[in-house]
Amino acid sequence: MTSISPFARVYVLPLLPEFSRLYPRIDVELHLDDRVADMIAEGYDVGIRAGGMREASMVVREIAPLHFVICGAPDYFAGRGVPAKAADLAKYNCLRLRGRGSQGARPSNWRLGPKEVPAAPPVSGNFIGGDITTLVAAATHGQGLVFAPLPFVLPLFRSGALAPVLPEYISQPGKLFIYYPNRRHLPVRVRSFANFLLERLRKNLDLGPDAQSLVAPYLPVRKRAALA
Image (cartoon, rainbow, N blue to C red; front, side, top):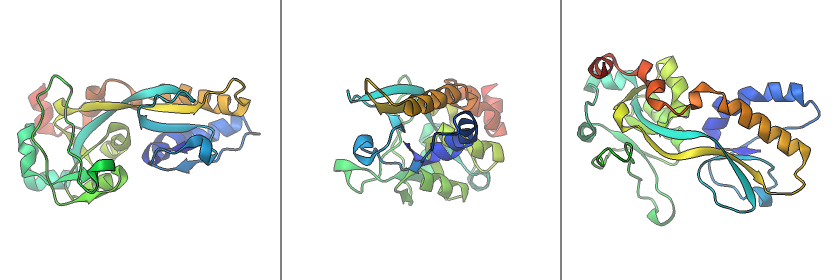
């Protein structure tokens, strides 16, 4: 199978020992890659990606909503304070992702907040990364703030390496989904693996729809008090 790397490391790899116990005769080959692969051309049976797919040649099944949250290292906030509103982001070093396609090297802006929240001002900063894993790692070292997928950073909230801020600007630009070839006679190994992953991942509370509840325990004390 092929999967976006941060998600697979945190959520897929821990499931594989159980799958191997249940299906000892099925070999699992895991390829971690953040690009959208041509699964059939490259020989993969199952894939996990974020965003959306409309290819008729694929069966696409939703795993969970994909929320993004602003976060930074506690040491970074200790020296600058915690932003209270979106306009405050102009005072912070915001880590951005390198744009793709026609954007070329231009860094992409953050798409903050649900639709009912007014658009936030553009963010800026002196660090641009080619993938979200790099940006999250830079944020843990105090480089600045990162706008990252919640499932990827929740473990870092628990460890204290990162803390979320501005929860009212959590956005949901896409979904996590599992996909596999749309074949009439799908191999049993493929169907078994896809169904196993989907069932286990949908039960994972970290992938639930209520992003506000997931981040609430890790908000800085001052912000928690303001929301109470």
